[in-house]
Image 1 (tube, rainbow, N blue to C red):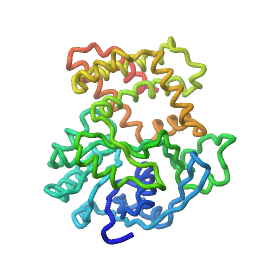
Image 2: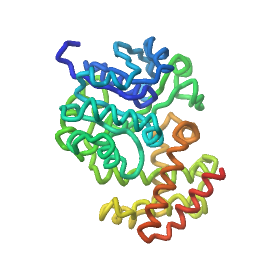
Image 3: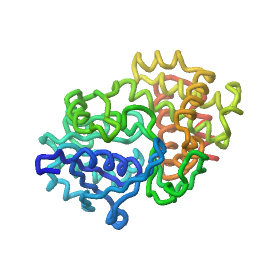
Length: 338
């Protein structure tokens, strides 16, 4: 690694942040984590990553760690990946962080990639940070990643249980791309994908901003699946009332004005049968990782508040636009009482 190597900051050292660091360090990128003080101890030792793709275990280190957001202004970063969820960003500490990001990088060439899931996150972040539109884009991993000990997921017969037990995190890629960044800022997307590439990793790829934005609607059937206690999708019928609630909520989200004609077109294609088929394909794609168990852990944990806020936000937007939002209202009620 040379002094001319690209430099990327990662806000948060959860699954997404650690996996991004793992990929980027292997292609020569200098990584600086910004974490809360209690996460610093974990990062003081090499991190172990297990791959469900090829049953291998790898360890990596060589990153820097800071705990004070004010120190961002001292970091000559090419990019900053913000992995905090939407609820965390909108909390008091998150808003203070956004102000620091704006102060540190406003008027610079540093590109910011947001990992938060929600409706209108990009425009909201731009307003709060004061950064320019060509400086910020939405992005996310194209993989399923989890902490091994905390998740304690079922171990399939093809998984090397001994290696998995030694890992801090485990990853299952869902396609050729390791990271997806939207094209809301084409120059930023081009520059970022050029850095996030190499023979040893799943390279980053650019995705349509409109398709990426609409993609958040998939949260509705995921949460409806939770109402079914994550039972095998082979045992779920498309006529199941809870499953239809999820698909109908997905359609109501797609019809929001913020998604424009692309959202209307997607809504016309959304049916309970089609969504169920899509999820069954995802389940196969995730193998040997148990997708139901992964979702049960992920959406029952720290992003649960984000999920509830997302559904409620979608409902309020739909009602304000004249939709009855029957499905979203019922989904929100059931989730709050689950």
